[in-house]
Structure formats: structure tokens, C-alpha cells
Length: 503
Image (cartoon, rainbow, N blue to C red):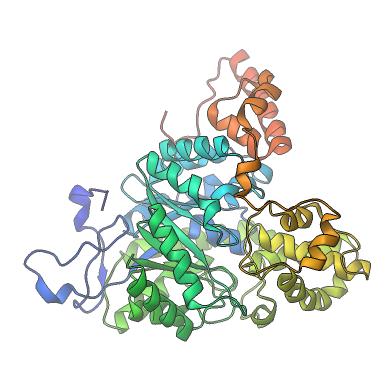
């Protein structure tokens, strides 16, 4: 669509029987090619999320930029519709655990994928953090991400409260980039195809060019996928992308059912980073599409080179391996996605209550119902999970309320899909009035105060954003960087970006 591959257009293996549409490499259907007629009528585009959700789901987001860099030539050659390589938890984890600048990682990825559509996952007003940020932070973050190399922004809100997406979507469009509106999929008494379609309509009105059904816990059955995709295609009319996890064993069948209903694209992860709490394997999706008579323009030889690299990389991250290699049926009841389950295990261990996991899993659906049935995705998954754990460990429900739970009941995260338990809300707020407007409307600008507070660091725009999003971690990281830069300057060494990144 917006990428001209030039001589590279001939690259890649078009997997299929020849009766499907071969897709361009930039993330969308190109239509029947001139002179080729009806033989190019059916296709399924595949995007790769290995560099973001693959290692976020399987290795606690610990894979370093260096271990991504050597895979980039193969990823570029694979002709994916797009590559989700940034956003989500990767920004925080790069700083907190890898000691890396996430902006430099984006530069390396952009440099290594010159003609591939680079996609990021943006949590609406939460950006890549765990609370709502003021509009000035949203505007600058999106602008720098666009300059840094993001082509396509997948934008979602944990509560499907579209008010929380207005500013970020407007910022993406103002920077001349593309928006994929995300719909967080879940099941509850209040979630219906009609409710998801209404979210889709509003995302279209805001300027989304395509929609993503984001099924983070792998709850979407094939029948549900078919029904929802068909409803979105008929009533909203935008292209539909499927993102679903293999946690419950539904994913591959759900992807194919969605494709039969009209979905144009599915997400996958390369084989070594697929399955368990991650996503279906790219290779598997391509072969299933072939058997169904569809074409997928991915170069499977290049995909295998990518897979070979990450097979070798896996061993380095054994300590962070989630160990989730099979179906976890507990998720069908608790709706806890893989990352949230890992957090709960760690939290209970810290509280000396590891043996009470079953009780917490029983408590999560109760807390979720009292909170208005939020989809369990960051940050709502952490809020619900942490409160459920506190309820079990203390033995008295809501006798201890986390700060995030209080903010949630106050309305600082937005409007949930269903009304909250008003009696519980009154108890938690203890006389404080809830917020009814768009949450960011009550937040004053943050960047001037942040720049003043950290003036001694003389931050660039990207560094200022690191400090605004993660003040403590960002300050420690940047102080260490300044020390290294001073030492390098004293020794006559230039403080350049990592090798392979643009100057």
C-alpha cells in the first residue's frame, strides 16, 4: 500500500494453489493484478509478532536488541504484511530489564526492515505504560514514534472505551501514519457481537483504516470468530485482522474461520516463539491457508532462516521461559491471559501464598464482574489480578485496596463495558466523587514539569518521554548513560547508536 518494494517485489514464495490473491508486502490487499483475473480472488495476509508479542508471551519480554538484529534480514525477506516489533511491554522491559534505550531499538529495527511495514502496539492514552498520560505526552510520543520508524499503529483501549483512543488516533493521523483500531475481545454477559461492532463503528469514525480483533487470552472459538468477523465486515466495512493466542487451543481454527468470514489478515509468531501462551506459528498458518485454497505471500525459506535464528536464541532465555507449552483450560473460566498468570504466580510467591493460586483463579471472575467486566488486558488485567490476590491473601475482600483499584473505581481508566458494583464503588471511594468525563480531560500537561524536574539531564525529546513514562527507571538509566557518555568523551570515544543503526 504505502511501500514500494521495487526490484524486491519478485521476492518470496506465494504459498497456495494459485487461486488466491498474492498480497503486497505492506500490509493489505492489493486487488486482482492486471491480467491475472479471477485466479487471484482469495488470500490471507500474515503479520509477524515475534519481535513484540512472541517474546513478551514466552520469555517475559527479555529478548535483547542484539538478539533481534541478526534475524532482521530474514524477517525483511519474508514479505510479511507487517511486523509488530515495538510497543506493548517492550518499551518498559528494554529499560527495566535489558538496560537498553527502546528508541534505539526502534532505530535498529527500522534500519533492518527498510521496506517492511513496521507496526507498534499502542495502549491508547496509556501509551506503553500502565496509567493514563496527559495529552501532551501522547502527542509527543506518537510524533517521535512516527519519526523513529513506525508505519502502522495498532491502537486499543483496555476497556474498549473509545474516548481513550481519540487523542492517540488523531496524533497518528496528524503525523501521516496509519491506524489499525483494536477491539479487545472477551466474553461476559454484556459482550456481544453487537457491542463489538459498535466499538468498530466508532473506531472507523475516528479514522482507523482497518480493525483488529485482539483476543489476548485466546478465548475466541471458531464459531465466535466467524460470527464477529462477518458482523464487522457487513456493518462496519473495514478490513479485519485477527490476533489470537494459542492458550486454549482455539487459535488456528479461529483464524481460519475468521478468514472464511472475510478477515484479510492474521497474526502469527515464528515457530520457536509460537504456541503455549503465544500465537499460532506463521508456518502453520501458511500451510493451513494453502490447504484451504488461499495464497499467502510469505517466503517460507526466509521464515525458516528466521526460525533457525530464534531456535538458537531460545537457549539464552531459558530462565525466563514461561514453560507454557500446552493448553491451559483454567483460562476458559478465569480469562487470565498468559502474561497475567505469570504475574500472579510471582505476586503470590512474594506474598508467601503460592499454594493459594486456585483460590485466586476463582476470585478473579468475581472481581471482574464487580468492576464491570473489563477485558483482561494491560492494565486492567493487572488491576483485577492484583486485587483478587489481595482479597484472597487478606481473607477479607477489599479490606486492602490497591491504588490502581481505587483509580479504576474513580474512573481514571475510563468507562467499563458494564456498570460497576455501586455499593463497592462507594466503599472504595469513601466519599470521593467519580470522574465521568474522558479521564485525560482531568490531567494537566506533564511535559513542562518533567523537563524542569530532570533539567540536569538535559534530555532529548525521546529521553524526556522515557522520564515522563517511567520516572524512576528512566532517571537511573539516563544517569548511567550520562556517566558512560562522559567517560567515552574523556577517552575520545564517540557515543554512537548500536552498529547497524542509522546515524
